[in-house]
Length: 257
Image (spheres, helix red, strand yellow):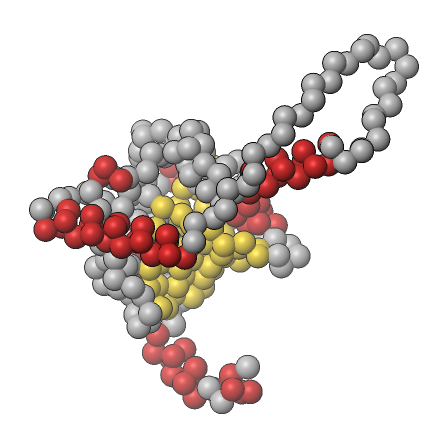
């Protein structure tokens, strides 16, 4: 593609000047203060997944210039990323600093899953957190093959808000986790209700089975439409005003409380 698009010279300069096979000192400092990153993986068939990871500064931990590790915190139980890594070790991390430097860092390498006890036995300096939801059972170790800059020109400037807006770690409360924000669960309820009411053939019971009482499925409410673009803009405007008031009042806090 570089040849087809005439970018070979620019790409060669970028490789020569920016792409490392390790984290230099400034990269290590950058990694150490980040509170989030995006993780790209794929399974053995090449089916891709991109996931968000977050935690306190240092949760993405530099073991040495050639190795980083991060914990797998409590999630939805799907384990898409570690499932992919168990089949295909190639992983890509993208770190974006929206607040301070407004710059990004790519880390590409080969990943593997390591048990918490095993990794701590070798690296007792690993951070330990007792907050519910921050107690990893496994870690992902990435042996770095490439590390390079993500340019700043399209990274927006964001600011932290006060602690009252922080999310709750480890919660199983669906409302606090976001509920059915995109209406997928409601759509599934409607779909199941239509299937039940659409004349589906009754299931034949095996000989000797007892009588089963069947309750009529309730008629679901109409699906709730997603917020309009205008509503999104208005909510963003109000959020920005709250953040600006907090900053002018000297409010502290962090991305993750």
